Amino acid sequence: MPPKLDEASQNNQKYRTITDLPVHVFEEICGHLGDNYQKEYWFTFRHVSKSFRNVVDSWNPPKFEKIEFSSTARGLVIHFDGYRVSYFRKSKNWSEINIHNNNEIAYSINQYGNFRDLAADDLMSVLASPGGYKLQKLIISENIDNRFAQRLSDKFKAAGTNIDVNHVDLYAAKITYPIPVNNILNLFRSIKKIDIKASKQRITQRHIKPMIDTINGIDAFRGRVVKIDRFFTDKDDKFLFLFDLKIPKIALEYWLRGHRAIDIVPSLLKSPNLEYCRVGTCIQRRDFEFEEYLKELGAKNVPENRDLYKYQIPNSDEFFEIRVEEKHRIGHISGIYIERKSNPA
Image 1 (cartoon, rainbow, N blue to C red):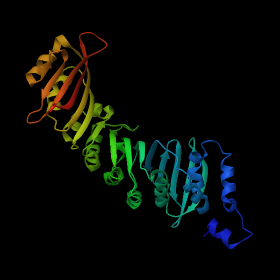
Image 2 (cartoon, helix red, strand yellow):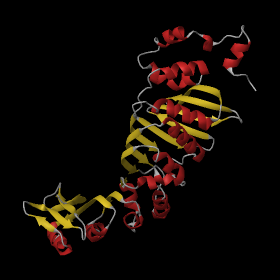
Image 3 (spheres, rainbow, N blue to C red):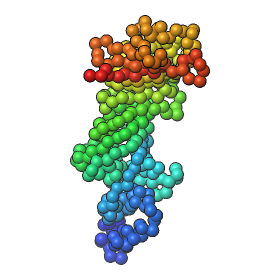
Image 4 (cartoon, rainbow, N blue to C red):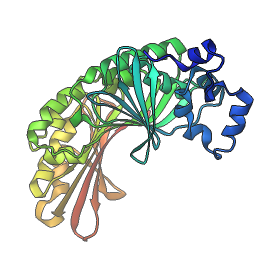
């Protein structure tokens, strides 16, 4: 087993590496690397040696707006804004860390330690801010390694970290194990917005049910509005997202022609989970008499706006606001918007 650099330099006075530089010399050199050197070299320097890592961890952590997780057959990949760092197992006690620049490996470092621990430690070096951390976007693009999720959870609890996330993108079609995803999402103090996104793989009706089962298995969604990408509802011929999705609050988009757009409205109004829906369509007003149909369902027109309706939800202080949009062509309905709202106290 190769010696660790710190140990080698201590045991052999003739053995000298860059890690033996005095701290002030190291920081003076860093000052010539450009204005953004702390962000650009944060992960590279952290894995050179323990002494370098101590210096880097004394800096103010760089602010990353977007972090993305994914797992591979060999390890983990984390994107910090435009910086991609991959962590792989080399042997029982050694890992390989690759730091990429424009999809090419800029630095490859052999590091003593478990790759999951090293990845979690890198994340915490950025997120564990004493005043809390506001992450703009978290992307989960594939399955997450369960043991990594547990290690990260342990570090969160030990540090007492408070992290808020503005926006989560989840690529559910490529996720088959909801538990580690759930564990990751539950680490955050708040999540403002969650989107279930489509990946590049081809989605058909047979993919919908397994994907709904995965989404239903993530209890971190409860209490939050989850928006479903229209790419899925376009393939969802049986409206399974509307009827089988069990999370409490959902936002949907559909594109339906003619009678299909009208026929789905009663089901939308009966949904206990729907927060918002847009049905894109193209309907001639004179052919379908959609407004009369809304009135038959119990919706009432708002007097000052012929395109606005209110549907009182039975046994509730909430109602659905229904807005009919006429766009591009006069006399043609191009969209039906349904939004859950509360009656004023």
